[in-house]
Image (cartoon, rainbow, N blue to C red):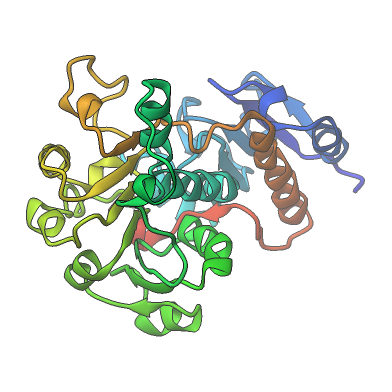
Amino acid sequence: MSHKPTVLMDTGFRTVDEIFAPGDLHRLHSISTVVTDVPAAKDSVEAVICTEWRFGSLDDYANVRAVINVAGAHFPSDRFAYETAFRRNIRVLSCTPAFGPQVAEMALAMTLASSREVCLGDAAFKRGEERYLHAGNEGTFTLFGKAVGFVGYGSIARNVQKILAPFGCQLMAYDPWLPDSYVEEHGVRPVTLEELMHTSDVVFVLAAVSKENAAMITRTHLESMRPGAVFVLVGRAHLVDFAALTDVLGRGEIRAAIDVFPDEPVPRDHAIRSVPNTVLSAHRAGSVREDLRLIGRMVVDDLEAIFRGIPPRRLQNAEPELVGRR
């Protein structure tokens, strides 16, 4: 590559070392000239790597071909000129797929901790109140052959599906943004949200946040769940009536594994902290330091493709039909 494109990089709250392994950072510098401040000649910039757009008007960057968000999601629609980007065929990419494997692993770990009462058993043991063998398993269940529902069938759900394979679960999904045939082709049965909630032994809430799905999982949905079923919330708390969830959990009707909350840090006096049939985590599912470097690998892979005139395949493309709804 005789011409080395200029890449403007401002990783914001992420450090360069956090998201780029040395080899991938070397690759980035070998295919581009990396600058960390907006150059005087903005039209020299061909790609931007950032956690938020704070570089002025996109119109000032006449030759930009890609804007890559390494924060973990696409830019909010009121903070980035998507219409301009789409009109100019600028790729707007997000590193969301990089989080799929680690979030899926945490979702499985928290599910097993809940269904097998690992945390409750540990706490009882430390109090000297442990129950051995059958007595300690009166309320537990295994995942083998169980009915599992995905609320949202995107990249994280598909990663969860992969690691559930050995359990032979009966899989179903609710995702109004996907055709039934697509879901079926992946070996998953498309269902309504109502059917999913009242027939699943485990419910994974993984849908992307949109303007229309705030608190779409209601008290009625939660109360319809099977007694003892596990509600796994590792996507966004936006999707659930969290007050209703806390109340239903407090009655001991279902269990939950929760990694995300409406307000973080969670208030010290929030009732969710004292509900015994929960496994709680401080938004840690997607923050494993060693795996964050998958972000950098995907970024460089896609920039190499873009600079060669090939479509990017690793990161998530912003889609005109959806950005305004997120």
